[in-house]
Length: 271
Image 1: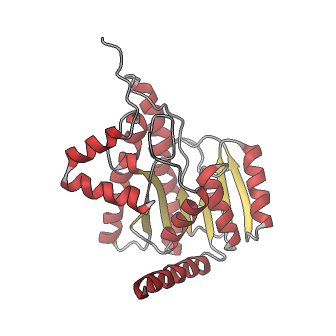
Image 2 (image 1 turned 120 degrees about the vertical axis):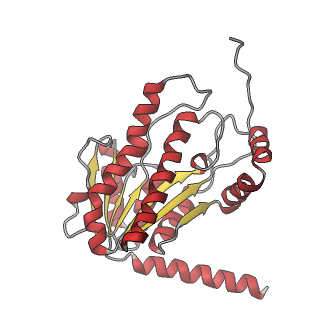
């Protein structure tokens, strides 16, 4: 019982610490018009941060900005449009610098057998990976000056090979490789910028048998807390992400089998 009390007390202190650390900080959240990104913007607003949100749909972003202001954000701005590696990044639009860059946007992909469409993978890499790289490069001078943080929202599909997600998974594995390597270089060069990679469990889909979606509000808060505390990686939910990764390292074939059991697999027609 005492162990549980101590754990709860520690978790509460971490939450309070992350709340206080972000008051007045300048934060960019991409993919913030809906879902986890939207909820992250609201949490940051409640913490008193200066928030800049981006997404494709300006009308939805305007509502998010209005809500952020109602919740007490230091300020709230928006930049609309599809992010790719060759588009103008919003990082320079925050006057006075930048403390945290949260990369959360994602391009549309299918959930089915890989259809051999190489162009689709190229397009998805542009949005899901290369734009993350471009925004990081653009934001780095400000983040180095502030000793800030980069938060990268990824998923289990970037750590484990899952069926029906080949293009999406390729982009998430690329994020892991780039930002894990960049973290090493920051350490060697004594660059005071943290990188937090967020490993999220799958949301519910028709082909998955037993998984249920996790609360986006709670997930958003865990991501922000991990970034504020400069954690190396965030696992959400923990048991659905950390345990499979342990299996991946010690019993890869068993994990592959267990993954397949969670899908209603329909065999493709014979060639």
